[in-house]
Image (cartoon, rainbow, N blue to C red; front, side, top):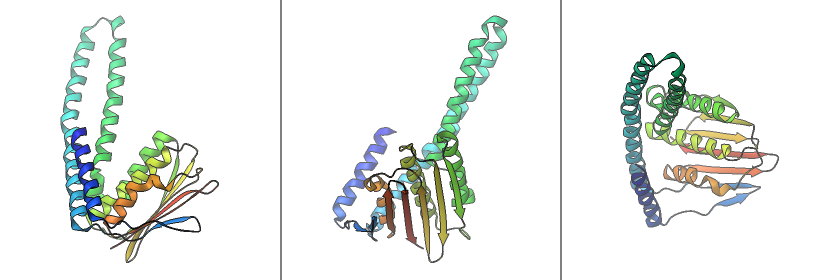
Length: 237
C-alpha cells in the first residue's frame, strides 16, 4: 500500500513538472495569494484515480479487517470462558487493546474515503471529521455556513481533503486552541479555515495549493503571531 502511494505521488510530481505553468505566489498585506492555475484534465483525472484507490482501500479495511477482528473477539471470548477466574485479566487487557485497534482502523478507513461524503454530502462529512479531530486533539472546532444542494463529487472530495489537511497542519502546531471552518456557496464555493495559533510557514500548505490549482481555484493564506492562520479557498462551480 505504501509503495503504491509513493508511486502515485511520483506520478503527480512528474505531471506538475511537465505542465511548467506554476504561477508564483503574490504577497499583499501579509496575504499569500495563489491565483488560478490549471494543470488540465490529466491532473484532475489522476486525482480521480487516487480517490478510487483510496475508496477500495477504505472498503478493504472496513470489510476484511473488520471481519478478522470480529473473529478474534469471538476466539478471545471463548478462551476467556475456559480460563480460571484468576487468569482472565489478561484477556480483558487484550480485548481493550483490540477495541482501540478497531477504533483506529475505523478512523483510518473514514479518512481514506468517508462514506458519509458519498451518502450525505460535504457538510455532514466535515462535521464528522471535525468531531474526530476535536476528540483527539482537544481543539474547539466550529463549523459554520451552508451549501444548498450538492456540488460535483470531485469538488466535495477536494474540499474535504483541503479541510482535512488544514486541520492536520493546525494539529502539528499545538498552540492553537480554537478553529473556525466556514463554507459559502454562490457562483463559487468558498471554504475558510481559521485558527488562533501562532501562525506557520505558508509553504506548509503546498498540498492544499496543488488541489486548488488543479480546479482553477484561488488560495489565500494569512498567518502571523497573535492572528493565527487563515486559509481562504475559492473554487468556481
